[in-house]
Image (cartoon, one colour):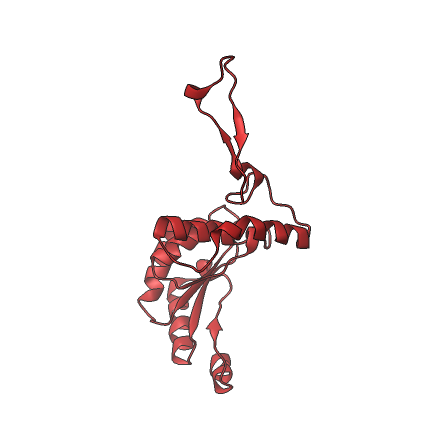
Length: 186
């Protein structure tokens, strides 16, 4: 009834059931069928506590697509460090919208990181996203400055160590020390 009411006011309706990834699949399919019939225009797969695996995400998206043709979206938390993997799998399976946060900011262990999935979709999947990849580091630093929430040095794509490199054993200096350097992220 909430979907129908929102539609009666001419609103775009994205139905976002919390804890989608831990909901009984048959019940989830019933809910999806009902909200689709009521006019929902997007259905979110919400991994509220970040506990689904990439294989689980593949299965869930595939099953959900069997019962509705409305566009799917996903919202992934990173509690197990799988938000980027789950986001990529969801896109592979036909999810059209992926929620992201700069620097992966969010509750607990954070959410799917814009810079991680944008770079992966661009480089590995040849997706044109309209994002200026060369500005992700600058964006990350601007968010750090505004929020005062630091980025860990080992953070993929925008962490300080992402631009550090270690020369392998074949290129060790005469004294046997590993040579270190850094790459300007700009």
